[in-house]
Amino acid sequence: MPESEARGLRLLRRLVTVLTAVMIVGVSTIVVLLALRLNRPAPPMFPESMALPEGAVPQAVTRGEDFLIVVTEDGRILVFDPSGAELRQEITLDPPG
Image 1 (spheres, one colour):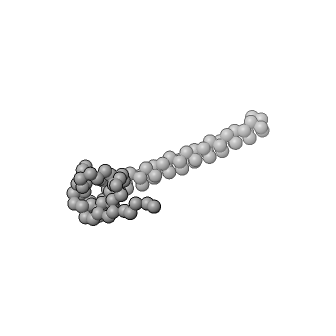
Image 2 (cartoon, helix red, strand yellow):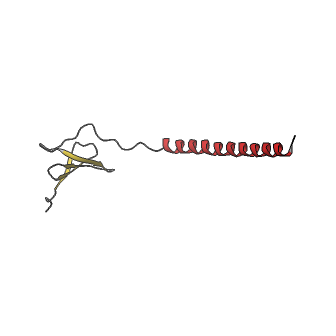
Image 3 (cartoon, one colour):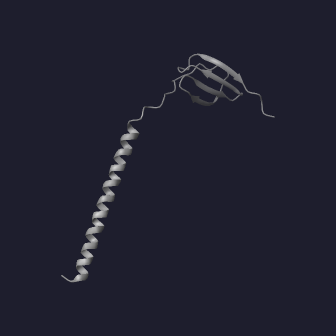
């Protein structure tokens, strides 16, 4: 076997070995990321319905650990219990200007 062909085969063998190692690291990384991602707790859910005051049109809704907040189109902030059934507090925002 000529010298140049032997060098080419050695290079090819090293390239295949490096490619195999990179693929093993890549697949391992994907498996670890999936395991971490799937083991996270589920995010808190919003209730199916909420007891909004008459005429309140929600503009934004957010959730904390122990409360739900609804910002209405008429500039009110409504703070509810986590189930959305009991209005705890109502805050009226001053109009801009």
